[in-house]
Image (cartoon, rainbow, N blue to C red; front, top):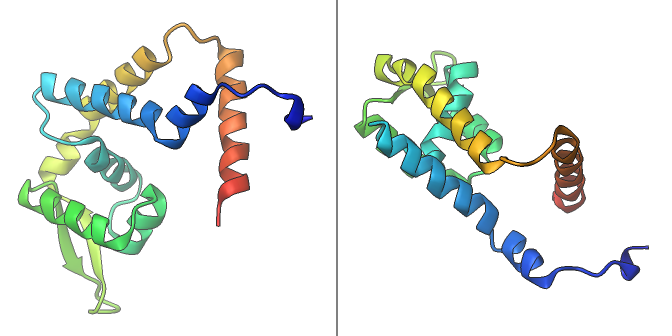
Length: 148
């Protein structure tokens, strides 16, 4: 069946090279800046996870955001400099730091969620609910097929 499908090679290259996610990230970054928020889309993904579950390990953040440990370390370092998060030693295991939101990090939630939702609506403009449902299911299957 799939052998008979005529693939759009430009679309395949765009997907493989991350052009769709890069375009959404550029738009999200621009929308954050235009609204006076000095956070990156990568920082937003960390904040989004912490708004749902504060006080997690760096490894939990890596798993949730699909980032490797060195990238996450740099990201958290930058977020600490911006006073968005703080590392606190785990009382049960002092070798482990738990990442917690600061007051500043917590205060960004409402505006950041609003801007992210606005950006997603802009990116998905013109798509029907059925197209979105099918697209989400297709992407989920592709991701499952290619996971380690």
